[in-house]
Picture (cartoon, rainbow, N blue to C red):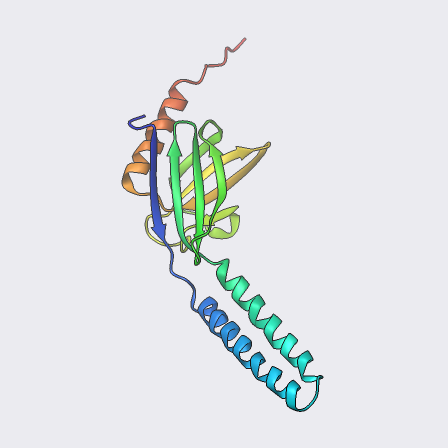
Length: 171
């Protein structure tokens, strides 16, 4: 390999429906505060409405905060690690793939129905690559969007892996 450690990232646009979910959550929380005033002056039963709208707003914000806005691809000598960063900049490791288990790497040509992981904006975008590997005896495929240098590094590693495989003896 040319380098021992390499990483690149790709930014992902937050979907419009998730942005709407965020604003609905903010509105529900603010709307619920009005029920506190109503419960003080009229009836404590308005606290039920407060709890309903407040909880709904918090749930909407929670699901919005889980949306990925960036994917980081980290390549070392032995593995490819894919990390997702959400809208509040929390990072979570989504996949860690041993390079010795990789069976196929190339430009994405299939539909996204067969994917076990989509780690980019869309499977049909230009520059999306698929990586097929064995995991616990099961063949899995992920789609991601590496840059040109990472593509060259993966191609080099896979060609070395194919050339170094011991040839089976036929009897």
